[in-house]
Length: 568
Image (cartoon, rainbow, N blue to C red):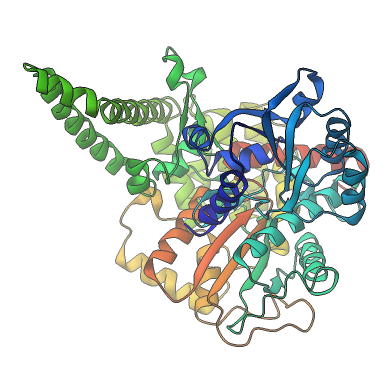
């Protein structure tokens, strides 16, 4: 809805006013931005007959003067160079240039100087510099995401690029929403502070005119937090549909690659999982795994009824009716087989890796106290032959995050056991995680045992019992949203930038997680928005994490920190 509509509107405006046959030219990032909000069939309806990447267009010399080129690019140095070369030797009859963010004056001069043959019809800034994967969830797909974890003494050049990309993405979201926010950040995070200050400088000083929308209502809130404040959520197995698909198979730009799962027909090796394009997925994306099985059974039954009625073709009228309904029938068939394939594949992984057993322990470590029982349970699972290496590592990490201060001796025993059972994991990775995201580094009350209110809430929850042992965990983000709704987000923990303070309760809140979001968190946001508390939350992050990506970033950061200094 909100973000998806904004991005779609930009793409619509680019394509609808340019008549005739078009080629859409994108870069490696805008291809993601467009693909999550616009399907290929919709592009065809707008007379886009070719979609190309800007770097591959540079390599080709073939003239296509009958086509109009619509460029949609990020305003990077590299893209400006590509355009410069392409405008010097134009292959298309017309060129329409759209940029996903603010152009510098120097870049406009370069483009003007290159356009000697005057093929450029227009140059526009359309602020869709974010990947709107769900109505209230966006990502920036930053490849060098691990940079945010590097200790302050290691300040590689890549860190500034990471900050710049995040500032660009956040500013584009607010330009698309036509609002200028009040900015707060997590006090314990250097990188959150740096990004908050750079964003504020851009919005209130460098480009203050662009962000001055003359709105009278209360300013929205932008809250910038650090992934390391809640390292538990990305380490957990997931049991709701969208989050589980990402954890076990992987989702990238709302697409799932199933090519490695065995003998699937070519058209099913990559499937789209989008709440905008798939009604079944929209209705079930936040449901738990047990209920999904029942929903898919109902969908299969409905499909069989339709298939049965289609087999009963006896007259010319029946045949005509079938031909009319065939595209719908075909679409239904594709949808049924897609969801059946996904659930079958996930069931297989759950069984192979004994995830029911592992996940029950994980949830215990995340939600319930009891160090002695936890140590025994984790020790037993480390000895279990059926438990995979990555699951052993995650269990030890979850135990370490919870009990780092309480049982250092037993923690060392688990480190040693992990090293002997799963030697592929470098020793020191769990210690690096504790250095990065241990109790001394965190702001929030991750386990609900610091704050009296949280202790009381946890006791009440314990008395009530939990509906489902596998989904009892709630991300720290849930508490943060509750604090914002009740006006209890402490200034000392989440200071304001500059002298812009919140006057009253904001109606819109964008929470940006440096280091990446999870689908469990985006589910929390969607469910919170459905309650209609008077505040609309939007979640954004540098990437969308599953445990594999979180651990990969951790390993990469540890490697760089080790080679740069002797910090670790």
